[in-house]
Image 1 (cartoon, rainbow over the protein chains, first blue to last red):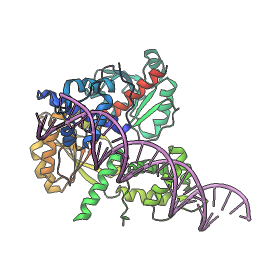
Image 2 (image 1 turned 180 degrees about the horizontal axis):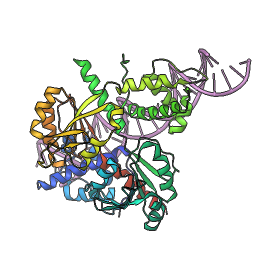
Image 3 (image 1 turned 120 degrees about the vertical axis):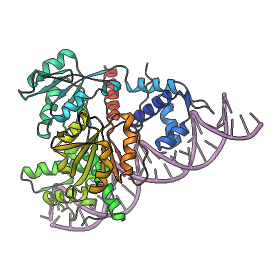
Image 4 (image 1 turned 90 degrees about the horizontal axis):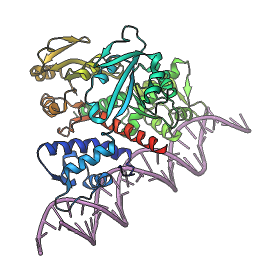
Amino acid sequence: MNKKVTLTVQALQRMPYYLQYLRKAKEQGIESVSSTSIAKDLKLNDVLVRKDLAAISTTQGKPKSGFAVNELIDNIEDYLGYNNTMDAVLVGVGSLGRALLGNDEFEKYGLNIVAAFDTDESIVNQIISGKQVFPLKRLKGLVKRMHINIGIIAVPGEFAQDVADLLVGSGIKAIWNFSLVKLKVPDHVLVQDENLAASLAKLSLHLRDEMEKN
Amino acid sequence: MNKKVTLTVQALQRMPYYLQYLRKAKEQGIESVSSTSIAKDLKLNDVLVRKDLAAISTTQGKPKSGFAVNELIDNIEDYLGYNNTMDAVLVGVGSLGRALLGNDEFEKYGLNIVAAFDTDESIVNQIISGKQVFPLKRLKGLVKRMHINIGIIAVPGEFAQDVADLLVGSGIKAIWNFSLVKLKVPDHVLVQDENLAASLAKLSLHLRDEMEKN
DNA sequence: TAGATTGTTAATCGATTAACAATC
DNA sequence: TAGATTGTTAATCGATTAACAATC
């Protein structure tokens, strides 16, 4: 049973870091951690950490000792839904698509890519990283039949909107978008943009600032 | 000459979207756009768009017509540094590393991966997507000699901190981190985390919410 | 001109941080 | 007990949005 709490997007994005930190602590045999020490290591404010953890933890932290590591791990995994896997299809088997298909870490985070789609005849029907590549025209049928909720877009920008329309028309509820195009979708469909260009912009600006210092 | 404006991280991350929008408009032969229409299409507030553009634009927008498309494109590209390319090295030639090496879009965003590194004997000395893979022990020498500023980490989590230390020790100024580990680096080094786990968390939660509605 | 659009100043909103009492 | 750590309430900070005069 999940608690009906709603974290802010910011808090949500911190969760994987807490989880990673806690798992590492567990490996080292540590049984409880304080929000103060987490904050210090993750370079966050300690009150912030306390609030984040309080939001998803089933039990309160204990003064003096802190939070129980094992319990907190369970709570976060439970909250983030890492235990009940999400089935997804991937569209676009280029170099990025292949990398996503081959990324075995996703399963740890509850994502299971069940099939891939492409229009390129030379790729179709191949099996890549254990997943079969189907022709794009078979997407709708397969997604509907298997009740798949997530579509991953790894096609070049010019085809992204068409693929999104197809996915939405097939009943998908969330799209993980690796193209740079801002997709137009109905309100009930979530689009999660993976915007590498924005990251590069940040890197670029930092370098410029560092150069100017000297 | 760049203006010495400092955008917020949020504003900075919107820039690639503006750029993509403007390039598309240019292709369609549109010569000027209003912040109102950009806002509408990108689902942003119009005042926000106006402020963002005012911050990086060399000329003001004109009442009635709006902003000049060509000029704005130049301004954004200039601001984001897409014109003077950043040289980078990539560490970890697994499936993700290969995808990054093969991504020819990065050059459009000013990133040029000059070499890759790995410890795996069977990969070393290969040429992948036109880039040579060197043994990791040669990283320091090569980075110093070529004055490279950016390191891309695409190794499994358990090696990420070691690689980061090596990169920092070689004089790198920014790290693009595709591992999930929170890296410890000196203050002058920027770490840009590409946190796929956080994205998955958002997808997962959205799906849970959608399910509960029904 | 009238209307669309700009840029600026003030208000709002929401997240983070500070202060502090409670507790093991 | 004393001290570390918790959780809560209030203050601060910063980004977004609203209101509105200026202008082509």
